[in-house]
Image (cartoon, rainbow, N blue to C red; front, side, top):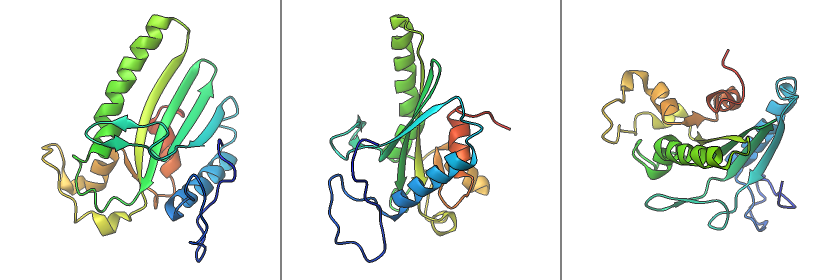
Length: 194
């Protein structure tokens, strides 16, 4: 990690101030889950180097669509010449409202455009590096509490009979799903689908 100390959320400790800002509960839970996931799956990752970086808000790695988006975390995975950068943004999604939100569009279509352009640049550099970029919104909002408040945002391919699958299709993963990190690593192509 690039920053020391990394301060986590703890109930009744809201008065602590730090730069970067202390982690909220969803971010803290993500870090704990991430650590446990790596411990429980160390055999899968024995040939990988895995780094988890906290991104600085408005100063770190940002992406600009119609407004700035600075994902909270960057997972960087190296395995020989293959590298994965996975941008993770834990957040409550109730106020995002639909699948046309810029942050959600970044995690689906915009990241794919960036990934394609970067792949072409790496191919032209001929340095043997294979880099894949992915992005996910990690919903700290519970699925049952938000599913009825969302609309399809004008997307015709949204089937609300299969609502949870629609969220996953748009790279929104629910933190309440205890397999969410495995799903992220599989979707990003770091580990095999099984």
